[in-house]
Image (cartoon, rainbow, N blue to C red; front, side):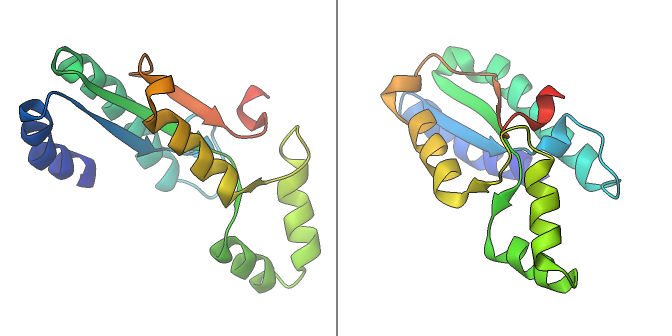
Amino acid sequence: MSIYWSARAVVPVMRRNGGGLFLLTGSISSVCGMEMQGVYGPSKGAVIQIARQMAVDYGKDNIRVNAVCPGTVDTPLLRKAAVDSGDPEKFLNGLASAHPIGRIASAEEIARFFQFLASDHARFFTGAVLMIDGGFSAR
């Protein structure tokens, strides 16, 4: 719902300014069924469809819209969950091994990908679902 309200406010401004970019954050849960993600997964799946629909609706206005779907990312919240698990090393190793690349992403890696997508180097990307998940969704 927040994407709708944001777009409703921002699209007219983007149109007046000759275009713009929405980078929506999905997740591996957007495309993969995962245990204990009964509400989170479907809500992240909706992000993909919103990105696609907005790309079609606003492309003529030079507004690009993409969905970025990260795998597990090393964040303070993830580190807290690891500690709360009672066995942080086992918790983190389990997450890393779920990704074919054998590790989780750094927050900087994800931020740099967003930075690339916001640059002129990515002007032809729109309506894309971009997995940055260490191969997780390839399984």
